[in-house]
Every structure is written in C-alpha cells, then in structure tokens.
Amino acid sequence: MTEERARLHHTHLMASDLDDTISFWRDCFGAEVVADESMAGSRNVFLDIGGGRLNLYDQAPNQRGPVHHLGVQVDDLETTVERLRNEGWQPRPIKTDGPLSYSMVEGPDGVLLEVFHFDDTTAEHLKPYFNLD
Image (tube, helix red, strand yellow):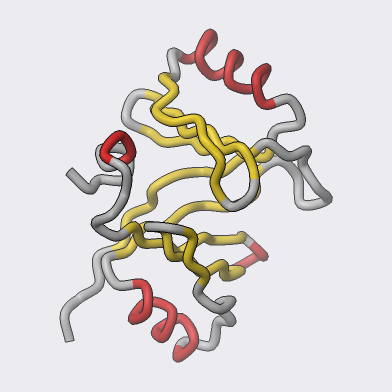
C-alpha cells in the first residue's frame, strides 16, 4: 500500500461581515485575495497570508464559533475516508461539487475536518492555491 500524503491546507472561518473580515486580514496582515467566488452555495474567499491559507465563508458564526473547520488536502480521498472508518471515525459521505470532492469528519475534541481532493479540471487560477501546478 502506498503511503497517503496529506497536507494541512487551510483554516476555514465563518464571517458575519465578509468584506470587513477580508479588509482586516488584508490591511492588518498583508493577506492577498486569491479567489472570491461561489462554492458550496455561498460566497467563499481564499486568502494567502505569507504562504498560509485562510478560507472565509460568507455566513455568521454558529454555536461552534468562528472556526468552522481545518482543511486537509489528500491525494486519494476514497482511501483516506476508508482509513478513517477503519480507525473508528465517522466521516460523512463524500460529496462532489465540480472539481472538488470532500468528506467532513469530526476529529478529537470535536474539531471538524474537511478532507478534500481537487481533480485536474480545477480552474487555472485556483491551481496554485491548491498545490495543483
């Protein structure tokens, strides 16, 4: 079996005022907007902050707070989801939205993880952000 390569890719924050949140990260920390588009039914903004990645979701924080999930990018989503199940975790069914396939799973202490993979039909302007170039 080939060892699966996983990368901690991003932190995903909920934002009650998306434009103010973008301004905060851009003006105070030099974040650059990589993409601003609709994904999974809502406006999503991807920021690069000195090589770190922050995804902002246009939705007010819920009872879990503003940190929605950590994004873990994998090369083989099906194998990773199967491994999570075999280890006793309960990943949700894989969903596909265009070039994105993902499964959500609660890790230790209830930390929500988005385990995801983008295929080769990903838009050119997003490939560098998702390490696909």
